Length: 344
Image 1: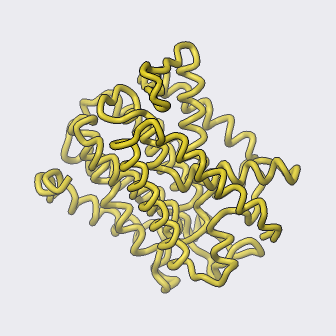
Image 2 (image 1 turned 90 degrees about the horizontal axis):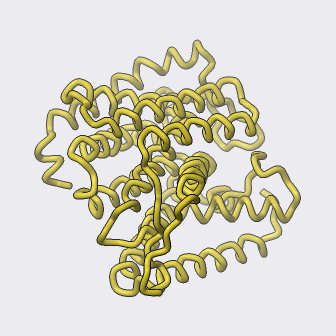
C-alpha cells in the first residue's frame, strides 16, 4: 500500500486538493439549494449543516482518476457509474426525504443491473465450516450477491448518525482491502481505493470540525455511495480469492453488519417498520451514555479494528471456527441490545 502511495504522489495530492476545493465551493451552493441537515428532536447537532461530503468524495476521487488515467477498466467504469446513481439517489433523499420503500427499490434495480453488466457475483462461500469441500451457490449466486450489496449499502447508511462514523468504518474497510487484497484488484482499482481513502481523510477533517463555517456532513448520498462501493469491492474480494474464505469479508465490515442486523431484529420484535428511523443504533446508545461524537466514533472504530484483527487471526489459523465465532459474537451483542429496554 505504501508503495502504491509512493508511486502516485501527484494523484493523491490532486485528490486532496480537489476535495478541499469542492467543499469550499459547494458549501454556499448547498445552502441555496437547501441541501442541508437541520436540527430536530432526533439529532444532536445545533446548526444547519451542508450535506455535501459524499458529493465531494465522489467527485474528487473520480476526477483524479479521469485526469491521470484513461479508465480502461470496464468493471471500474461500471462501478463509478453505478456509484454515481446511488449517490444521486441519496442526494434526492437528503433533499426531498424519499419513501424508504421507493429508495430501497431503486437500490435493488441499480445493484441488479450492475451485477448483470459486470458479472461480479459470489458463486461460492468456500469451506467456512471445515467440511473439506466448497459450498457452491449455483442459481442462488445472483440473489445472494444482490442481498449482500443492498444489505451492506444500507448498513453503512443506517450507521451514519454520528460525526465521522460511517466514513471512518468505510476507510477501515478500504485499508483492509488494500492490505489483504491489493493483488486481487487491478492497478486502476487499487488507485481508486487510494483516492477514496485520501478524500475520506480530508472529509473527516471538516466533519469533525467544531466550527460551523467548516463543518459538513456525509449525507445519505455519501453514506449510500460509500456503502455501495465498499460492498461491491468486498464481493469482488470474496469471489475467486484463493488465500482466504469468502467469510473473511464479514470481519471487514463486522460493526455495520452487527448494527444493521441488531436494529432489524429489534424492530421486528417491537413490531416497528423495518425502514423507520429511530435511535436504536449502537452510536445512539453510546451518545445517550454521555459520550461525545468523537469519543463514540473512536470507540466504535476501535471495536471494528479489534474484530478485524480477530477475524484475520481466525481465518488464517482456525478458518473452520471463523463463522461460528462471528455468529456467536453477534448473538452476544444482540442479546445485550435486546436486554436493554431503554428506548432511544
